Every structure is written in C-alpha cells, then in structure tokens.
Length: 98
Image 1: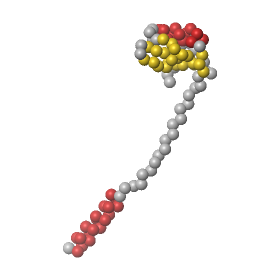
Image 2: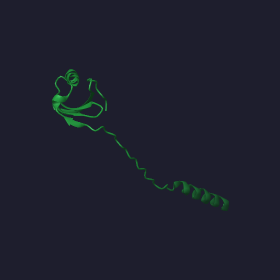
Image 3: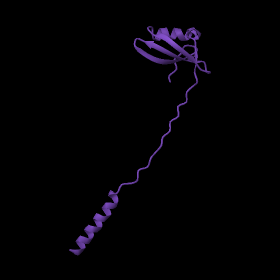
Image 4: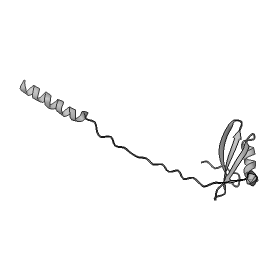
C-alpha cells in the first residue's frame, strides 16, 4: 500500500512538469515594401497607347491623375462609376500587375 501511494505521488509529480507553461517568446516580423517612385504628370502626357488600352479595357473609365516612374511605367488613377482605383501600364499599353 505504501508503494502504491509512493508510485502515485511520483506519477502525479512527473505530470505536473508537463502541465507547466512554457515562456512566451515574441517574434517580430518586419515587412518592407519596395515601391517605385512615381512622379505626377499631366493627363495629356500619357501615351496614346496607354489611353487606348484604358478605353478598350474600361470604356466608362475617367482618367483623373497620371504618374510616371523612371522605368516608363504609368500609374493611372481612374474612376469607373462610383469606384476609384489605380491601374499600372507600360508605355506600350500593356497592363502591369502590382
């Protein structure tokens, strides 16, 4: 009987070590977004290939602002109905996903 109580105490004592909580470690995740620098240009300075592609893809779109980067990519701020968004295109009128 004494051995039974002793073995039960040992088993319960060893289980409490598994029940203890481990210390919480904080992991810091940094995200860096690389963005091309776009400078604002006049809407009239956008190449006709880009404006033609815009009219073909979005006939009801209104071009409100245009930006250009050093790689001759264009950022177009457009309004379609009540939605406002940005589109990216190359100088030849092909769309760029960003």
